[in-house]
Length: 177
Image (cartoon, rainbow, N blue to C red; front, side):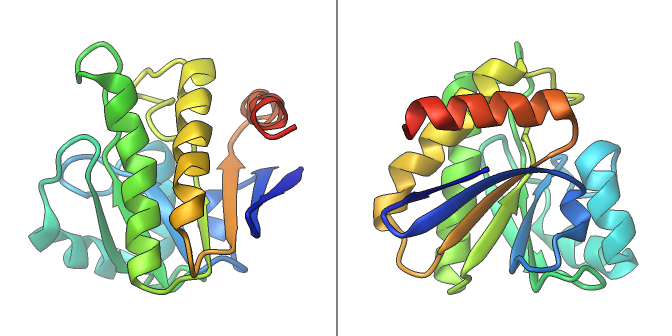
């Protein structure tokens, strides 16, 4: 599924965030230390190789809502943007911190002159953010940032499960009729 807003294509697909070979930057749902973890962080670090963790060391720790950018190493992408999403029920205000992840990632991609970016569903795994609420926050944050984008022309949401994909499609259809 895709929608175009102000010349920017927004896509929602099911797949592996570490296998987006037509995208310039993938977003890592990182931990504060920017190390290999489970879920998205594990998939990205395994695919990128050990040099990614070495490049990340001096950039850590990051706080919820923050984002940093590195090279892609062995990934098919030129860059990885690492965001620390909020832990639901522990980091406040959750919605503002989660929205900041998406806004800061888009800002870094723009600063690097990148034309495309792929996001996972940040904070919805081990960090416990309910999918419906997280999807709403993510899509609204991206939609509010689109008018400021000059270089980015494609924003892809890569969802792990069919359930996540269905939620993103429904929410995007409602927000962008």
